[in-house]
Length: 274
Image 1 (cartoon, rainbow, N blue to C red):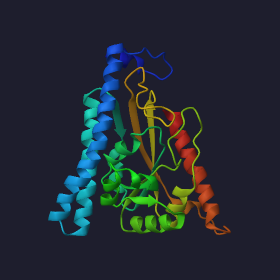
Image 2: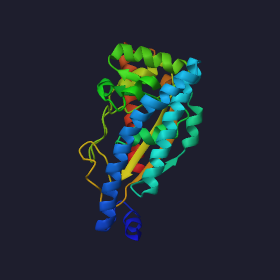
Image 3: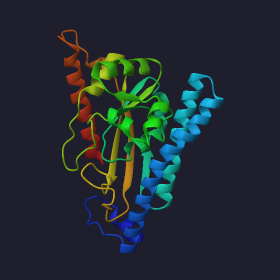
């Protein structure tokens, strides 16, 4: 393990690969935990959420208990990842999420674990998911029970996001639309800006880094990094969307364009700070 710590002292230093036994262990543990993650989705859907619906009649209380159950399951999963020495992670500024009622949270998206890491430390996390995930037998029940927003149509989604934010929800969105590609500049879609401007809410900026990369868009789960990956999540300040609206705007698209450019700049700055 000393070799791993030495290799992580700085990104610019030469990474000294861990022993073959260490890498084989992380390969095996990664595969087993990913299987457990999928099975956990079924257990929550078919077992725990069914019990909650039987004993909790108040819709708001049921929804909050459901979200808390998902959050706690993520905390447990991440604890296993850490204790089995698959990955390590550090979250800076997580207490700021307590201020984010009725707020949009955006982050870059380098790894498959990003949502799990953020949802594990947010008091409430309303997520936007791809419509295709409703066909996934492991997570379909979780998505429906949690009331996650499904990206099935732009106007419908905007209305649903506006309603959720004005009701005090906190929506997490990855404005790149997919996981980042290592070594390429961040490109943002305008969806996050359109949602924030439509709802009139502020945006919390979060930057995520993972060194060395793991569970990336172009990589496979079994492509085990030479050393144990380290995730660093930095929860930063808020962006006031009203500052990007100008009187002479011909359409809301102009404000969305300015806001998107600013958000990209913010995320690129965090990238340079790592």
